[in-house]
Length: 257
Image: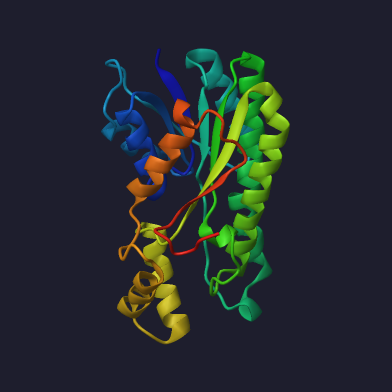
């Protein structure tokens, strides 16, 4: 029987890799992104499962009504076995210069979005009575504050780790497992922007910042989106059937706890 998963922020980067990896493993994927065109393009490139194409939808993860409509519609039509809350944003500023408006934007997407989508997914799973699994994308910045120029991002990702534990504690009785992944330095369009911002803030070059990242990583390479996707696939699989409330480090050793 085909399993169905919704992935948010799946129009590029980590979300795209998660969607592809899950599709390759036989999941029917509902690809969502605030950018509808990007979501549609990713859905079109995924390998079909049992001859059926994958679905896609525009989704603003900050909207409870939109998330609820998507979760319940998916559950009613094709079932909802899993949800991956991956959508996220970042902005880089020195703490003393960071505008409150950016803090609000970061929290709205990175933390409120996980809360909103988690509620919607869990309510749909609860109504179906079949249980399920939820995976949230946090960050190694959700485990340490030693991350330059990303104070609002750090706060949001610490929040995701805590929220994941709270969700896992309350939803366990309904056979819904909730975990999060904590990536490190992942080569994505978001990181490309951050490299340029950090180079400017440090007064160095993009290559210089990249070298710092490599020096921080014992496995001596930058993380690929597929590295995160493989961890998500594990957390959604029967192999992790007794794991919940976990913040799984996927960072090549860049931060160990």
